[in-house]
Length: 306
Image (tube, rainbow, N blue to C red; front, side, top):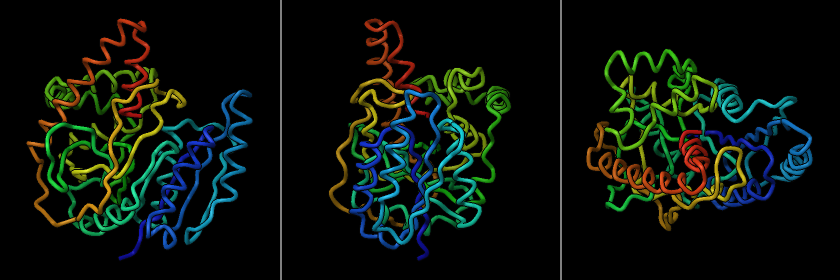
């Protein structure tokens, strides 16, 4: 099995970045993996010192097969940094594993990701592998498929990423034309179409809302683990897009998630569990909005699809 290179996108959070990399180093496959660190440039003088602190730390990172640092000379922003950075690496390696600087991985994350990328590469209707799963209340199977690529620790292949469509307006028109907007919203459980509209209008720069729209329009599936192998520790208010909240908190899996070949079809029970979760957080965010003039719901929604 040829291991996928790992990409980590960083900005101005040195402490979060350190935790992300230290957790990844505990994976047994880390020392055999090539690591690419994309450091976005500062957008203002306030962020400049923190960006330099991140870069100072990145220069000390080791315990991987190789470490390559790409320091942006201008501020790309998260979405453009990811879109461009993934293309750079995937064009050379054919597949990638992608993390952001606020994701803590289980020691079994790389094993699951590489095994799944290897197993499902021939499956043309599988667009990506995801390492995080929402804290749903229902018991989930060991692994399952949904049409929902996600952005909290994921991987894909070159021939799938080459199909990425950055034109949100075109995607939205096609969703409406084919009467898929309700399905896009998980049957009304969460306003993902509103997030896509906001991206079109420049109110957010979400790359993954467009990835999700492409996947739905083309019936492309993503493999999820039944137990999360990623913890999102950026919901402490430190990030660019989100406010403080614990709605995405999960317990990391304490054991490997077995990747067993299965039929590549939507797991309807898992989809219902996601719908229930989305409804629950939508309600909690609405209640917060009444207390905080709508700011929290916008920030948290942005992180779900950042």
